[in-house]
Amino acid sequence: MTIPTYITGNASQEAICLAPADKPCPDTAMTATMQSGGANYSSPPAVKFSGECTELPTAVVDNRHLVGGSVTGVQITYMGFGCTSAPQMSFAGGGGSGAAGTLKLGGERVLVSKAAIETHESAALIALVLMQLTGALAWLGLWQFRRLARVPAWNLIAVLLVSCVTLGYVADAANIGGNIRHPEIVTVQTQPPPNTGQPLAREIGAFVSGGARWMWPTCETLHFIGLSLLIGVVLLIDLRMMGVMKNVPFTALHRLLPWGILGFGINVLTGMAFFVGAPGQYTNNPAFHWKILFVLIAGLNMLYFTVLDDAWILKPGEDAPFTAKFAAGSAIFLWVGVMYCGSMLPFLGNAF
Image (cartoon, rainbow, N blue to C red; front, side, top):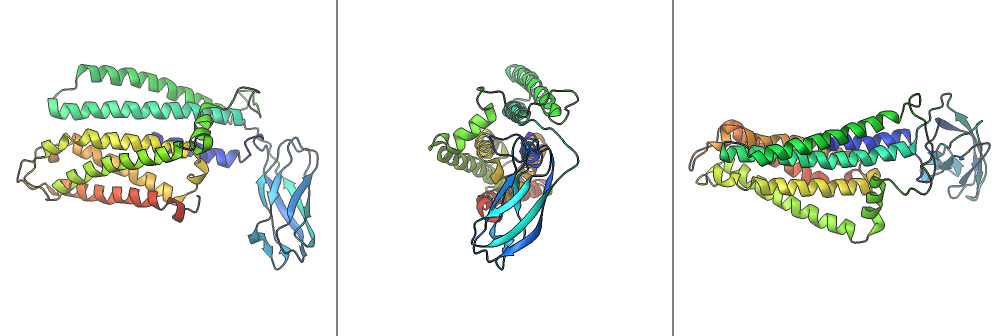
């Protein structure tokens, strides 16, 4: 659940702070209205603003807003900051003339700190990694309990210690996140402090997306290796449940589950590296939403083969009960769905 929770943080940032990297978050909503579309525009004109603002807004005219040589609207890409009155809007270029429009400022001013948002993102990223480590150690304890009828002492100690550290980082991330929209309890800074560098999450994102040319292809390679480990183990177990390889006891296949979890862990880490590197490609991508949903349900499905006895008691030649067959069939469907949605990210979502 920490994966979709982390993802919603980036989606929330896009909603409350749609701003370039070098500009503060907008402090008010801004709407544009065309007074005249003009005539004879052969290409989209440039949009220019003037007025008393700390940071002027920016906008573009795309091909959708150019109909019959007239400008029908503009897309505001940055709503500006610190405007004491509505800026004036003008159009230049495009081969035409006569286009005119006005801007209207929203009545409510809300100060949101980009520095606080990015600090929260970094704290949440550390908490996410620690939570995945906690989950991996806890799952390993369940796996060992199935084989040994007890949880080794070292595993209990490791889960306790990592859980305490994770709780501390989660609490810190939650506290920072709570301050973002509460200027009554915290002093709002519209810009990051000078000469402090980018927060950790943005540093990692820049490194993955373009800081090192080899990083993204390396993550892609590891992602496919992890997927191969995961799907290979899942298919073996699910096919056994559905009647294939009936002479193989489940206890033999159970030994392979850590390899499947290792593949899943590799996929989580590399997948989050992709997300941190280019969150805008994923937050509004329906294919990505479906992929995460399939991953969540498939993860719960995998617990069935770790915790419950239906599969564990299967002996060579025995047929699995209906519940085990249903869990196996649904797991195959879910992981095929994960692979399909992942492959279709550039095509279904149109975000790449």
